[in-house]
Amino acid sequence: MNCFIAGILGGWEIAIVVLAVVLLFFGGKKLPELARGLGLSVKEFKKGAGMSETDATKPEAPTEEPKGKS
Image (tube, rainbow, N blue to C red; front, side, top):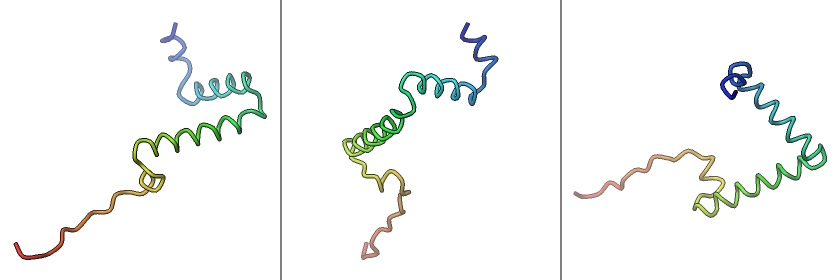
């Protein structure tokens, strides 16, 4: 059954169906609150994992070793 549905629906169609189901369950007024809560939970997870927001979005800069006597 899953292969049959996956053969008919592509990635965007599945995303639209999932969004429609979420909208039916929670309603239009509740979605912004859910999105805000999801964003805060991701921020807290990154903080707990030892990453700050800037670390997660900023690429690592190459570090240069100090030039000294070897």
